[in-house]
Length: 109
Image (cartoon, rainbow, N blue to C red):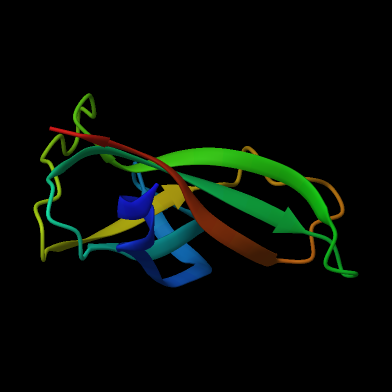
């Protein structure tokens, strides 16, 4: 749990990106490892918010994942990694376009 405090999410935002040749809505950000251990899997939870800031959906993403086909590299201490996840197929109906994010789990090498 102590290590969770040393890992930061920065500049998490909703934007438009290209994935598999098509434009779409995505969540972008950066994860920064200020801890002393190498992370092999980081789990973040994104909360999709309504106009009244209520959570209407949650979804887990893995910005660091040693099982990933596209980038299985671990996150070493003092390093950061940019990420982006397409969300067009999971956006809830009454979503305001606002999100909140938090790191919920870390697995170390």
